[in-house]
Length: 253
Length: 297
Image (cartoon, rainbow over the protein chains, first blue to last red):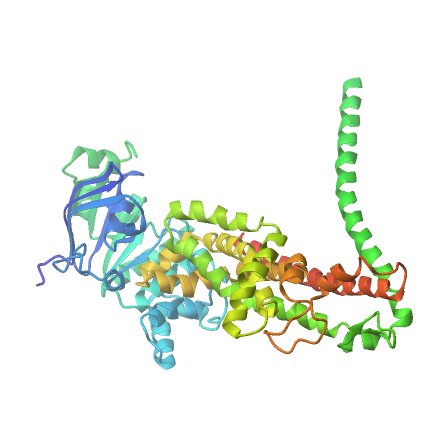
């Protein structure tokens, strides 16, 4: 079992209407590792990461071909319960998007919609998730305040804590630091580094240095295709494709 | 230099023009309020203020003793409006939720304008519906001699308040940022949970404002209730009794009252009370809407 990929895409094509956005994507992401997706704007990074928890489903006119396997099971099988899938594959978005609720209720929300009623248990998990997201010490006395009173970086860590609370197996980060200042970014990178101990992490990023710092594996995408996918060290020191080399050395992009 | 002066002059003329327009509207509003106030005040030379607000007998033309108590009609007004809200709020919010969250966008593009057009149906036509359609049906269901009662009025006012409630609620539901529902769905919530636990609370102030505007319309409506509620000037005993609202009283009596009599002034006093009620409702909904818009920014 150890050798099996946690989440894997096989021959995935993706269309918005008649326009193809992903071409023959094959990638296997290992358990307890950080996989980074890099590439120029519009290359399909975000589209791809959103196929992994079926967040694209709400967009009208989309079509997907191929298989996406979570522990060997196709998540696009008609019998798959999307709600259960999304609990297993959590997501953190580009811009921090807390609910207009209190800090506590932001995290309790995911537990309550899953039918948890026990107040003590909810409080326990909220505290644990906030600690895991390294936010607890900063806000433990402000649990009843509106989440919007937090800074941007804190809001993003709150969103991370929110997805941790429902115990996902995989966490998808869609450019989690693009709307955040450098100091807060450093904290989130550190956090992602810690998270891989318990979770499988996939990060879309615009920032190549960030990918180099935090990831174990990196996939370079362009025009809807994966150009190269390898260990991060290899991609950044000795890429086998000249396109990858041109991109990471800043010749375009 | 000369050219500059000319453009300055033009500028100030334009300014003055718009200022006059703006001030005119405000002055007309104040004028109406002042007219109401000053025509209402003489009523209280003859009428005891306490009787006016606490007596339920309104009988200004009695040859024996005249009574000027507005309690019955205030109760009547609130009863039909309340009944209308009980019917219109769930249907209105349900329709708004359907349009913003469930319906295909093509359906929304067609249905929403239709609902808004509903607001343009003349109230006399809706009152007509009350007499020829709802009246007989209600009489049959409840076994009363006629169907001109509070329920009839409530039904019609609900129909009239619905477009406002649906339209503004739908606007505020659609204004909920997509990132909220994305976040909710990504946590494994279904669309129903997302609607009830995230979108509706986030748009609550807009919905409350919508309800208040609808309520304001229901309270101020005259022709429909005049036609459909039977206009018995007694204190209402229930939703099946015939009632008479403040607006209907004014509409019925003002045409036949001798000018500058106590009765005449008393009707203006009723109008003043009505004005204050709707004014407070509108003010409240405005405050709530403003708060909502501030938060959105």
